Length: 198
Ligand code: SF4
Image (cartoon, rainbow, N blue to C red; front, side):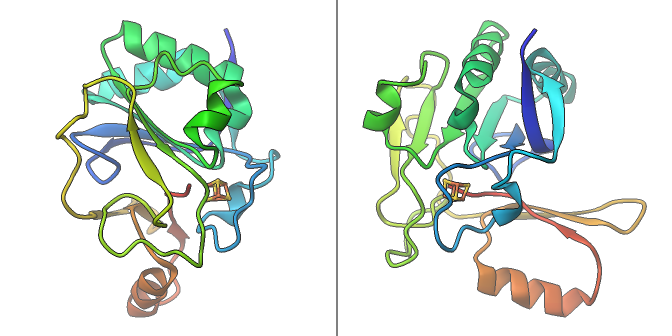
């Protein structure tokens, strides 16, 4: 069984695409966009090595509709991602994948047969997105590879805040740096974990 290097895994979120999902932030990104919100995921070192079957089991156990793969850059681990998507597809789960590579770039180097919706392209700080949810810059596109999520995308961004028993605060959903700073100022010096990139 192939393992995936995972920076963070969050089941039962409604902030990372349509429906209730398991979000998987992969560890490692070779693209390294200027202004990326998740620079702690650039390095391949860190996170946890998780069997791809365990990721799917986490989603099934949580009763989620599907997986959202974020970065880091999922397709820097293209073999593990292809296997993960195939297992998810067999289990009836939908797959949304965010990538800093374009669809054309991935077409020659990655198996996308298990991906329903690809959100493609790097984050370009000079072209901030002001209208569409889920994406950070205007160049990023929603490429529907199946019709599973056609007409299903949310109309606005959602930010989810979870406070653990140890006081650690976990964020999911789309957050710009200014939003995060306002939130951080508002709660003082608690530990923050956050997601979304690409
Ligand atoms: S935005 Fe995505 S592709 Fe760009 S550096 Fe961050 S994780 Fe990598």
